[in-house]
Image (tube, rainbow, N blue to C red; front, top):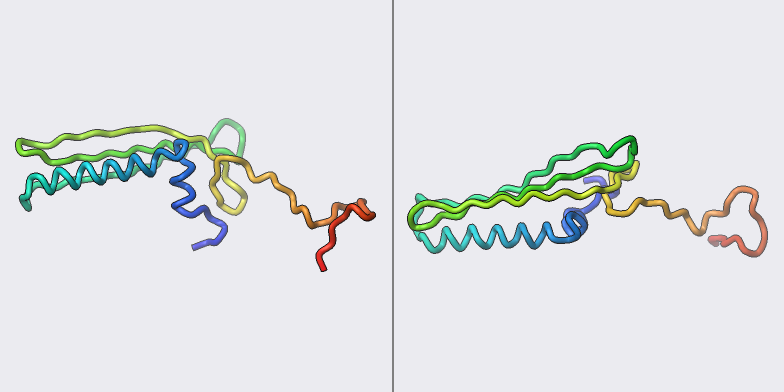
Length: 124
């Protein structure tokens, strides 16, 4: 795995304002409860997380990530299904990191060209 890529924990905390992770956990719990309540090997639950990524306008650093959580939970006489679709606009760095905010921070310890004097930090 590339160390510059965003971890799944960080990404789930940022997608849809941090609500995608708890929504996925709720879908897993709901499906598991249905399977346990039916207590039969023939009835199964299913949870699916789907991402669709599209570019945003002419900006090469932004993408729209559409995310859908679909789940089905068995009941005694059939099953119940639900799908929740939302989207998030994210920035992509040139190294593959995906974040809500663009990475525009400059290196504070690197002296700028043409700037000299006591105000320039030096690493020793």
